Length: 397
Image (cartoon, rainbow, N blue to C red; front, side, top):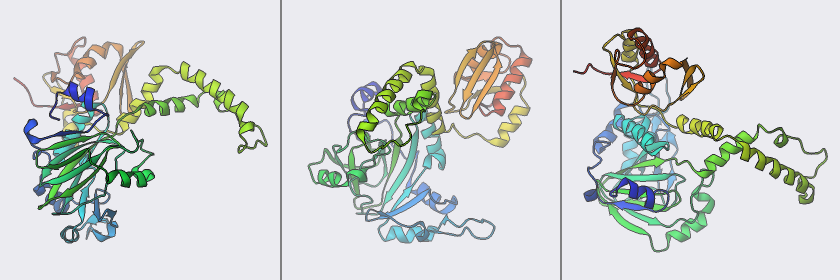
């Protein structure tokens, strides 16, 4: 983002907007997405809703205006119609390609690694706007965003928040009047983004953008940040284990009468404070971990090649950790416990040194892993290939 990572983390992350001109960045973004790529997605990739939204004058159009049957043998009714999209775009509609971190290979790889680096789930959308058009009026997002301009030029207006650090349950339309009023004030940023420029906006910052004299496209990399409220939510879920907090209120209570609620509120607050103090951090971490892991996926693997690799493991087979793979490894008594999204694998504790090596992100070869003989290494690697935790790689000299 044009500043050192430690400076960005200390000064801007979750705090303030940052504009980074292309000249301050190491490279442009044409390896991630181009206008030609967008045409391919819209015409040759069998795109379906909701991976495409179309908006005009700030309103989202019904999908029946740009989808139709997939034709003979397809048995789908909501495939994007490229000719319909072309007509709407020509008439001034903005196209929104959603979930590109699950659709387009360069962005799949990019988002997978970025999510690991940041520690927060990542999504990627693309906004394609006709010349001299505006897709959406001033609004704020409930997640942080990195805007990466990939084609054309777009004028961005950014204003200070009207509601700081909004949660996902606090969208901008809950503050529509304040947003509209703030948008009439002097902007914090009023700049034209050209290809290779980037803009970081913490959640809550108001923004709107208008394409200039040519087609404009930008990527919005949404960061679904973990917050302190994420921890509160986890703690409250764990609080349900306390029988005092599950107790039934008296028969005939008038819940509309504050005086009748007072003694029960007092007891509830005391019980809640006690259970919060006594909740082990490990329990909170388990819930938060599940939240993060369920929101991201590791890098794609090739199912046929993966199955073949698992069947043919032998001494000299090279493997590596699957890109973006989340895991937690611990020894519990005589077992090594490997937690990955959706699974919990237990193995003999003697495998822990070899497991730790295989999970370090570096390439490893069967025969050189610590603490196990070749036959045991073969069994372990085969298991982790079948679980999709490791992936095969070509032999190395």
